[in-house]
Image (cartoon, rainbow, N blue to C red; front, top):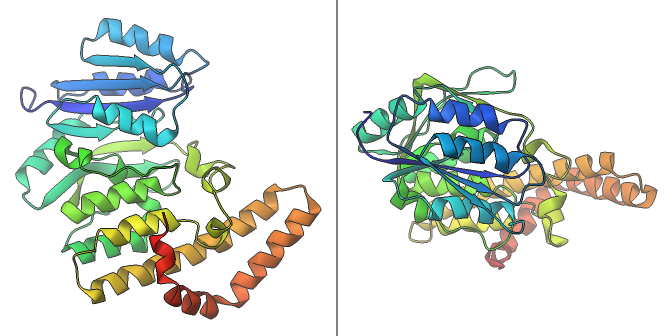
Length: 311
C-alpha cells in the first residue's frame, strides 16, 4: 500500500506543545508512506509552532500553516480539510496516538469494502477497555445504532474516508455542541464505518469533551438549557429529509431522549461548578423540574417539532 493513493491527515492544534511531538512522531512513522500532513497552528501562545516547524523542516510531507488570530474550533478543523489535496482524508487530534500500521490497515479495509464509507482502528480511551464496535446495516439502522451510544464517537470521527465525502460535510455556522456527532452521522448517511482490529488509537481524556467548559462554551441561548444539542439534532434530522415519515419519527424520538439526558446532566454539572448560591439554587430547581416531568418533556417536544428547525 505504500505507493498507492495520497492520504491527507489534518491536524488542527492550539497550545499543544506537551503532546504534539509524540503525535507527529506516530504519524511520520506510519508504514503507509504516501501521506500529506496538514497542520494548522491556531495562533498558539506556547512552543507548538516551533515544534511543528522543526518536523516540517525534516519531512517534506508536512504542510504547516499558522493562523494570525484564533479561529473557533470548527473553523480550524475546516481549514485543514480545505487545504488537503489527498484522495483520502482523516483528522488527527493533537494528543492522540496511533499504531504505525493505522493508515495502511484502514486503507486496505476502506478500499476493499464497497459498503464502507470510513475505516478506523480499535480504540482505547484513557485506561478504559479496548473498543471494537463498528456500524453496519442500512442508513436508518446505522444512524440509529450510533445515536444509541453517541459518546463513543472518538474513533468514528477520527476515521479515514474519501476526501470528497469529508468535503461534502456541511460545517455548522457556529460553534456547536456534539459537532463530532454531526460528522459521524454524515459519514453514516453515506455508508458503514468499519473497525480494523489489527491497529490501535490511544485517545486522550484531556480534550474539550472532558473539560469544565463542555456545556457552557456552546450554550448560546436559554433554549440550550432545554435542548443542549438542538443544532446537532436539526442537522441529523435533515439527513432524513427525503426519507419516510416513520424513519424521521424514529430518529426524532432518539434525539429527544438524548436531549433530555443531556439537559439533566448539564444542570447537575453546572450546579456543581458554580459558587453563586442563587444560580446554584436556580439550576437545582431546573434539574428537579426536568427529572419530575420527563413525560411532559417528551409530550411537549412532540408538539414543538418546529423548534428543531430554528436557525
